[in-house]
Image (cartoon, rainbow, N blue to C red; front, top):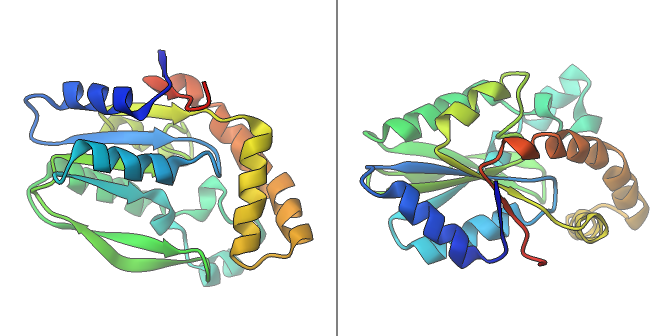
Length: 208
């Protein structure tokens, strides 16, 4: 496992892995506020118009479902996503023969948005970013076999938590509530996600 310190090298590895293949699925994994979404977007820019990013957040279960299950206060945990739908969507993306609609996620209301984008057969590189792509239980173990190349994003703890609190405040939480969520559910999830880092093909550490 190598550690990559700039996205140009990440893009180069992706191009090398995609040579001769009709489509490649790349996984970008990391804890909350590690910078996965930003990294995925920048990789798509580097890789060109035949690439597209997909976020795992669109597969959050609706808040009404979480409330009914009693898990609204753990939103973001592995069991608060529709993992079966996520796996089936990745399988269709990997097949590559038909357009695949992809849900988005509205952070302002913390709800998934149906059919926010579409992956057509013209996209040769699909960059999937999310927390649990390398997790080995709860149905998530079906994800890694669908990914051709994986990267785990490593970031200094205090920087990540500061970003996380700022994001929670931006989308409506009070400073106290933001700090409590970052130290509670987010911290629990980060420990779980961190345990999967050794399953990645490479590490990304942009602070080095």
